[in-house]
Image 1 (cartoon, helix red, strand yellow):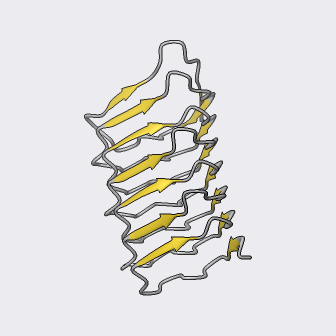
Image 2 (cartoon, rainbow, N blue to C red):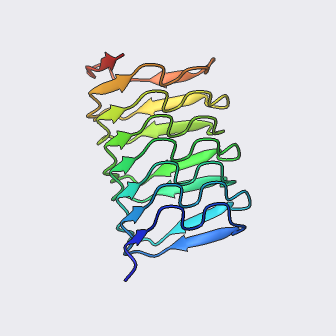
Image 3 (cartoon, rainbow, N blue to C red):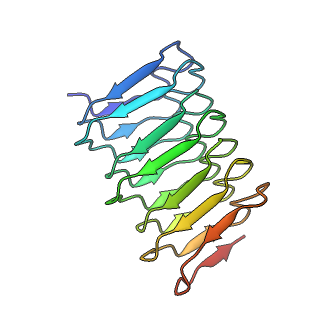
Length: 171
Protein backbone atom coordinates (compact mmCIF):
# COMPACT_ATOMS: atom_id res chain seq x y z
CA UNK A 1 0.00 0.00 0.00
CA UNK A 2 1.05 3.55 -0.72
CA UNK A 3 2.71 5.12 2.35
CA UNK A 4 4.82 7.93 0.92
CA UNK A 5 3.89 10.23 -1.92
CA UNK A 6 7.35 10.79 -3.42
CA UNK A 7 9.16 14.07 -4.02
CA UNK A 8 7.91 15.96 -7.07
CA UNK A 9 5.23 13.33 -7.78
CA UNK A 10 2.66 15.85 -9.07
CA UNK A 11 4.94 18.90 -9.44
CA UNK A 12 3.47 21.44 -11.85
CA UNK A 13 0.61 19.23 -13.02
CA UNK A 14 -2.94 20.38 -13.77
CA UNK A 15 -4.72 18.36 -11.10
CA UNK A 16 -7.62 20.21 -9.49
CA UNK A 17 -8.31 18.10 -6.39
CA UNK A 18 -6.94 15.07 -4.61
CA UNK A 19 -7.95 12.72 -1.81
CA UNK A 20 -5.04 11.40 0.24
CA UNK A 21 -5.57 7.76 1.36
CA UNK A 22 -5.47 6.96 5.08
CA UNK A 23 -2.28 4.86 4.97
CA UNK A 24 -0.10 7.71 3.58
CA UNK A 25 2.36 8.80 6.29
CA UNK A 26 4.39 11.36 4.35
CA UNK A 27 3.89 13.84 1.56
CA UNK A 28 7.34 14.39 0.02
CA UNK A 29 9.21 17.52 -1.03
CA UNK A 30 7.57 19.58 -3.78
CA UNK A 31 4.92 16.86 -4.27
CA UNK A 32 2.13 19.29 -5.23
CA UNK A 33 4.26 22.41 -5.72
CA UNK A 34 3.32 24.69 -8.61
CA UNK A 35 0.01 22.90 -9.14
CA UNK A 36 -1.74 26.13 -10.06
CA UNK A 37 -5.14 24.48 -10.51
CA UNK A 38 -5.05 22.42 -7.29
CA UNK A 39 -7.70 23.98 -5.08
CA UNK A 40 -8.94 21.06 -2.96
CA UNK A 41 -7.15 18.49 -0.80
CA UNK A 42 -9.00 15.96 1.31
CA UNK A 43 -7.59 13.57 3.86
CA UNK A 44 -9.23 10.35 5.03
CA UNK A 45 -10.84 10.74 8.46
CA UNK A 46 -8.49 8.04 9.80
CA UNK A 47 -5.42 9.59 8.14
CA UNK A 48 -2.02 8.42 9.38
CA UNK A 49 -0.17 11.33 7.75
CA UNK A 50 2.77 12.47 9.91
CA UNK A 51 4.97 14.68 7.75
CA UNK A 52 4.19 17.39 5.23
CA UNK A 53 7.62 17.87 3.72
CA UNK A 54 9.49 20.84 2.27
CA UNK A 55 7.44 22.91 -0.20
CA UNK A 56 4.90 20.09 -0.55
CA UNK A 57 2.09 22.47 -1.57
CA UNK A 58 4.17 25.55 -2.42
CA UNK A 59 2.52 27.79 -5.02
CA UNK A 60 -0.62 25.68 -5.32
CA UNK A 61 -4.12 27.18 -5.40
CA UNK A 62 -5.58 25.46 -2.35
CA UNK A 63 -8.13 27.57 -0.53
CA UNK A 64 -8.45 25.72 2.77
CA UNK A 65 -6.99 22.69 4.45
CA UNK A 66 -7.67 20.58 7.53
CA UNK A 67 -4.44 19.12 8.85
CA UNK A 68 -4.91 15.53 10.10
CA UNK A 69 -4.29 14.84 13.78
CA UNK A 70 -1.21 12.62 13.36
CA UNK A 71 0.84 15.25 11.53
CA UNK A 72 3.84 16.06 13.73
CA UNK A 73 5.76 18.33 11.38
CA UNK A 74 4.98 20.86 8.69
CA UNK A 75 8.35 21.51 7.08
CA UNK A 76 9.80 24.62 5.48
CA UNK A 77 7.87 26.34 2.70
CA UNK A 78 5.17 23.61 2.86
CA UNK A 79 2.36 26.09 2.13
CA UNK A 80 4.41 29.12 1.09
CA UNK A 81 3.12 31.20 -1.81
CA UNK A 82 -0.35 29.69 -1.52
CA UNK A 83 -1.99 33.06 -2.16
CA UNK A 84 -5.50 31.60 -2.09
CA UNK A 85 -5.06 29.66 1.17
CA UNK A 86 -7.26 31.56 3.61
CA UNK A 87 -8.21 28.83 6.09
CA UNK A 88 -6.18 26.23 7.93
CA UNK A 89 -7.62 24.00 10.61
CA UNK A 90 -5.98 21.56 12.96
CA UNK A 91 -7.68 18.58 14.59
CA UNK A 92 -8.53 19.11 18.26
CA UNK A 93 -6.21 16.23 19.14
CA UNK A 94 -3.44 17.50 16.86
CA UNK A 95 0.03 16.05 17.46
CA UNK A 96 1.76 18.81 15.50
CA UNK A 97 5.09 19.72 17.14
CA UNK A 98 7.02 21.82 14.61
CA UNK A 99 5.97 24.51 12.15
CA UNK A 100 8.91 24.92 9.77
CA UNK A 101 10.68 27.94 8.35
CA UNK A 102 8.47 30.01 6.06
CA UNK A 103 5.85 27.24 6.18
CA UNK A 104 2.97 29.64 5.45
CA UNK A 105 4.85 32.64 4.03
CA UNK A 106 2.79 34.64 1.53
CA UNK A 107 -0.40 32.71 2.22
CA UNK A 108 -3.72 34.46 2.83
CA UNK A 109 -4.69 32.79 6.09
CA UNK A 110 -6.92 35.04 8.15
CA UNK A 111 -6.55 33.39 11.55
CA UNK A 112 -4.74 30.47 13.10
CA UNK A 113 -4.98 28.56 16.36
CA UNK A 114 -1.64 26.98 17.21
CA UNK A 115 -2.21 23.43 18.52
CA UNK A 116 -1.14 22.72 22.09
CA UNK A 117 1.54 20.13 21.18
CA UNK A 118 3.56 22.59 19.07
CA UNK A 119 6.96 23.15 20.71
CA UNK A 120 8.67 25.18 17.97
CA UNK A 121 7.67 27.75 15.38
CA UNK A 122 10.66 28.35 13.14
CA UNK A 123 11.95 31.47 11.39
CA UNK A 124 9.48 33.46 9.28
CA UNK A 125 6.78 30.75 9.56
CA UNK A 126 3.97 33.27 9.01
CA UNK A 127 5.90 36.14 7.45
CA UNK A 128 4.17 38.25 4.81
CA UNK A 129 0.73 36.75 5.64
CA UNK A 130 -0.94 40.10 5.10
CA UNK A 131 -4.48 38.83 5.78
CA UNK A 132 -3.57 37.29 9.15
CA UNK A 133 -5.66 39.00 11.83
CA UNK A 134 -5.75 36.59 14.78
CA UNK A 135 -3.14 34.20 16.15
CA UNK A 136 -4.23 32.14 19.11
CA UNK A 137 -1.93 29.99 21.20
CA UNK A 138 -3.70 27.28 23.20
CA UNK A 139 -3.73 27.78 26.98
CA UNK A 140 -2.27 24.27 27.40
CA UNK A 141 0.46 25.09 24.90
CA UNK A 142 3.83 23.35 25.09
CA UNK A 143 5.42 26.02 22.91
CA UNK A 144 9.02 26.54 24.04
CA UNK A 145 10.74 28.34 21.17
CA UNK A 146 9.81 30.78 18.50
CA UNK A 147 12.36 32.00 16.03
CA UNK A 148 12.96 35.51 14.76
CA UNK A 149 10.60 37.20 12.36
CA UNK A 150 7.86 34.57 12.52
CA UNK A 151 5.32 37.33 11.91
CA UNK A 152 7.47 39.60 9.72
CA UNK A 153 5.47 42.02 7.61
CA UNK A 154 2.24 41.51 9.53
CA UNK A 155 0.48 44.53 11.04
CA UNK A 156 -2.76 45.00 12.96
CA UNK A 157 -2.78 41.41 14.19
CA UNK A 158 -4.03 40.18 17.55
CA UNK A 159 -1.78 37.57 19.15
CA UNK A 160 -3.33 35.73 22.10
CA UNK A 161 -0.65 34.16 24.31
CA UNK A 162 -1.48 32.48 27.64
CA UNK A 163 -0.04 34.35 30.63
CA UNK A 164 1.72 31.28 32.04
CA UNK A 165 3.59 30.52 28.81
CA UNK A 166 7.39 30.89 28.98
CA UNK A 167 8.74 31.16 25.45
CA UNK A 168 12.34 31.76 24.40
CA UNK A 169 12.99 33.69 21.21
CA UNK A 170 15.84 32.38 19.03
CA UNK A 171 17.80 34.60 16.69
